[in-house]
Structures are given as structure tokens and as C-alpha cells.
Length: 265
Ligand SMILES: NC(=O)c1ccc[n+]([C@@H]2O[C@H](COP(=O)([O-])OP(=O)(O)OC[C@H]3O[C@@H](n4cnc5c(N)ncnc54)[C@H](O)[C@@H]3O)[C@@H](O)[C@H]2O)c1
Image: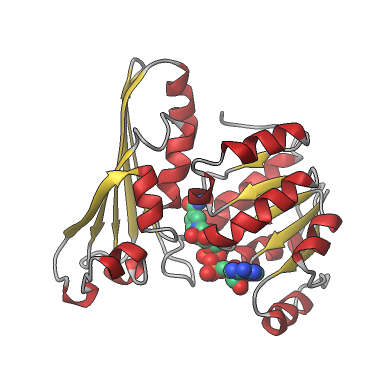
């Protein structure tokens, strides 16, 4: 299958490299990004150089499109890709909340929207738990202050991140509210809510934590199955907001697409 990559940042470039190194059954069809010259240079540097394409050309050339750009760009990518009947892997999955219309579009065009675990783990357990009754899903995210810079919530509340010298609660709310307040920081809670009890009932607290250099996520799920606790400490990639596990997990997902053995829910 031909794979098209949208966005050549921390995640997109690693996905291109992995496809270039070889994933059985998959081939890099091309990529698109905002900065054409930079993107073209990168694509030329691959072992098997791939073309820079417009979004429309990329969708036409691909059986599977991977979105690794922004929630805002997803608003254009998703309907175009799904209307063309192409499978869509979504990294900016906060943008999927409330978009049942896209799920319906995928069903009507016999394609799928796939959300990788990316920066979080344990979604297999959450999906299993959801088959029975779940009473609560809560998450706490701790990030170095600079990992929260530029978020709408930080700007609206006029929070001076440089002045934070000890762990500070910055935000508390539902997954829906968190994804609006921090569109580039908490896609993990969107994925968690889609795997579990939905974005209104899934709760998150976000802390700025200057004393620890990694992004940390802690999930607690309670239900008839018992109690699940997941903790992840993510080493940042070249983008301080994006942990390395985000692209490693997506590469694992691509490898599993064509694999004869699949492990995990
Ligand atoms: N689901 C998760 O757990 C998870 C984890 C990490 C990152 N993410 C999300 O994945 C996305 C990609 O992350 P990243 O670290 O690679 O980002 P990045 O900022 O490093 O790269 C983004 C890329 O998208 C491109 N882009 C943005 N808007 C565009 C547009 N309108 N047209 C064409 N190209 C456009 C940029 O040129 C850039 O190449 C982000 O939305 C991020 O929040 C999700």
C-alpha cells in the first residue's frame, strides 16, 4: 500500500525515514508540508527519494494518509481523505472530538480513521475495560513549562511560564475542554477518551512541572474489571511538545498493518 505523509515535523520525518528503511507491504508515496523548499530537501535526502505533493495529489497517490500536522489542518485533510475512500491515521486526534460526521463519512466510503496510541500507553486495557462498566477515567499530565508555551489557555489566562519554579496545577477539566485549551499538547487525552468513556466524562489535570525534564502522563481507570494505572515518562523529540514514543508507536502501527501476527487489543 502507498502511504502519504501530511506534515514533515518531528513525527512526519521519522515516519518517512521508517518507510524509507522498509516496512513490509508499505511504500512512501510522498509527503506534503508548509515549507516546500525544506520539505523537498528532506524528501531528496531519503534513500529512495519521494515526491513533494499537494494535499490533493497526495490523497490521489495514497491508499493510506497519515496526518502529522495540526488539529486545524486536520479540518481540511479529514473530509478530503475520507471522501476519496482512503484510510486516515490521525495524530492530531484532539481534532476528532465531536466529529461523528467524519466517522459516518468513513463508513459511507468504506475506509477507516485510525488513532495510534502515540504518546500514551494502556489504550488496549481501556478498550477492554469499556466492554464492561467503567466508573471513572482520570488523567494527570506533567510537562516542563516550555512544553506548554503558546497554548491558547496559557495566553488567555496570561500565565507567565517563566515564573513557575515548582509544580503548579495549570488546568483541570474534561477532555473536550482540554483539547480546546491545549490543541498541540494533550492529544493523548483525546485518544484516551475515544478509547474509553468519551470526551465529556474523561477528566484531566495539567501541571507545569519545572523540576523534571520529561513529559509525564498518569492514567487511572476504575470499573467492574478492577483498577488500571498507567504511567508514561516521555523523552521529548526535537519538538519539545512531542515525545519520541509518539512516532515510535505510529511506526509500530504501520508495521502491524500488514503483519501476519498482531499482539494487543
Ligand atoms: N496523539 C498523540 O499522542 C500526539 C503526540 C505528539 C504529537 N501529536 C500531534 O501530532 C501533530 C504533529 O506533531 P509534530 O511534533 O510532528 O509537529 P511539528 O510541529 O514538528 O510538525 C508539524 C508539521 O505539519 C506541517 N503543517 C502544519 N500545518 C500545515 C498546513 N496547513 N499545510 C501543510 N503542512 C502543515 C508543518 O509544516 C510541519 O512540517 C501535532 O498536531 C501534535 O500535536 C499527537
